[in-house]
Length: 120
Image (cartoon, rainbow, N blue to C red; front, side, top):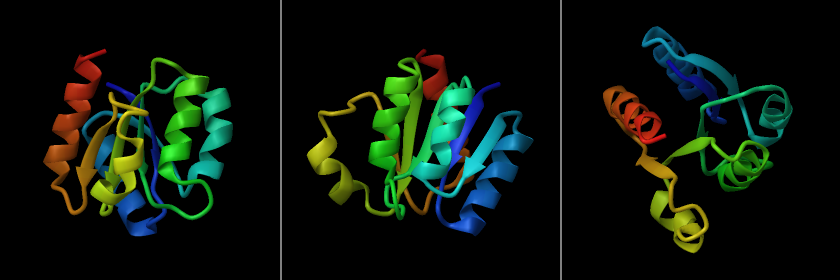
């Protein structure tokens, strides 16, 4: 399975996703924002970044940009309630990233992770 870096500022959502993705066999490192994720990018060899777009401090778009610079092969899935608004100006910047709009079903996220990783 995959080694996933999860950045989500909502504590209950972060805990739920961490537990759920671990149960289906992924190794998950979860953080509350982009700044907290940076040291893990330097140390880890992650297959996938799953990040909320709208977070305090460093948002998910900047985190994704830095992540793919640090680890060019890293895949990205955005999870957000503001997908259309937040990604319109960045659509051409990262055309390989996937976006799931909240609320989403856990099965949808697991399926999307499988699709993204299979495309590697």
